[in-house]
Amino acid sequence: MRAVIANHPGTPEVLHPVTLPDPEPNSGQVRVAVEVAAITFIDTLIRAGSSVASPATFPVILGNGVGGTIDRVGPGVDPAWIGTRVVTTTGGRGGYASLATAATEDLHRIPDRLSLRDATALLADGRTAVGLHQAAGISSNETVIVTAAAGGVGSILVQLAKASGARVIALAGSRTKLDHASDLGADSIINYRDHDWPSRIHAVADDGVDVVFDGVGADTTSALFPLVRRGGRYLSHGAAGGSWGTIDETAAAERGVTLVGLSAIGATGMFDLTERALELAAQGTIRPTVGQTFSLDQAADAHAAIESRATIGKTLLLP
Image (cartoon, rainbow, N blue to C red; front, side, top):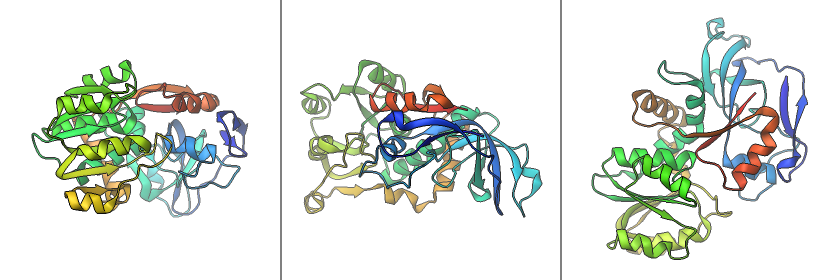
């Protein structure tokens, strides 16, 4: 099979294509002929050896989400799976390849009205966004801030918040990204590369906000947290700014602000969250943003584009 491997942590250039023996599925597994492989921001952190991500054992084939057709099943697996188009996680690694193995309990059949690319784009970002949205418990007419609003997760959160009847303030770092968030339904758009961006939020929400979805962290967190009114919710789900944001839990409690981390979204079950995301997309309630695609051999270029903040929505590899 063809794959992309990193022999050691480093810049995107450590990713290079190789040819490896075809994997065979073990008991309880299937093999997927990969047509689409998803890239997540966490992949770039793992590749770089960042302390923000869980450490990897190198050499490593990155990628925890693929879409394609099952071409082989392991011992004890129903052969009826062969020929089925699915999206699936891969156990944390192995997605940047033309073939990947996956456990049967991780397989999601693709709804008829959903393309393989859209389904793969929803595999990680969809379940994260749906889980965060459920944990936030948004009510109609509440004011919601979505950071990285043109990203894979953020673009879905904008749509889910609007579907809940919220007033959405979208934050992003370029005019193109802000325009995309506006197209998705955001009521106000603010560029947080402008030095006065917190005051611009005050201008459109002078009495504070009810919910913040923070996928950026770092200094952005310290600027956003004071804007949350009593009874609000602050949901931290990413560290695109280079580090997780810090919030004083005592101060949050004194103000009656509920802090919600990524660990809270697994209560429903990650599999069920993915199924719900696929269902919502098939219904037309949400649509993933597939901003750019790269060939498998261009994985290094894809990582470089993500790290330069030049991408919109989801980035996919096409083996």
